[in-house]
Amino acid sequence: MRFKRGITHVVFFDIEYYVPGEHRNEPDLRGNPYLDEGFVIGDVFQRYFPVESKLEKKEEFWIWDMEGEDTWEKERNLPRKIYLYFRESWTH
Image 1 (cartoon, rainbow, N blue to C red):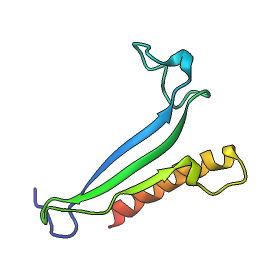
Image 2: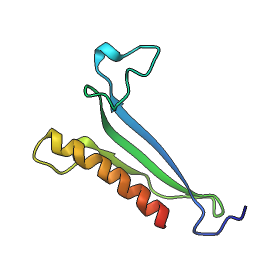
Image 3: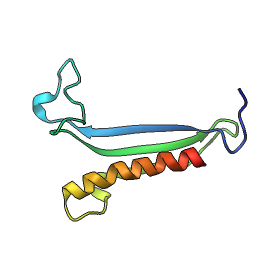
Image 4: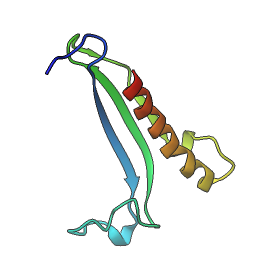
């Protein structure tokens, strides 16, 4: 395996989501954001270039910062931002 300067990178990410009270502290995956009651509230991403030992600035996407007329529209725009970040990382 060869690593290329300026191309090889790792993406660290932390996705935060809301879990309704009745699903908290369960031993299984009832807190899954796929369920109607839960939803993704934000993400923090950071690219790391191991050859240069360089970290890029963190990128943060939070539902309250999304464009949209209402919560539903903001919830729709958040996954788009996440997708675009990964797509940009892939084509970097």
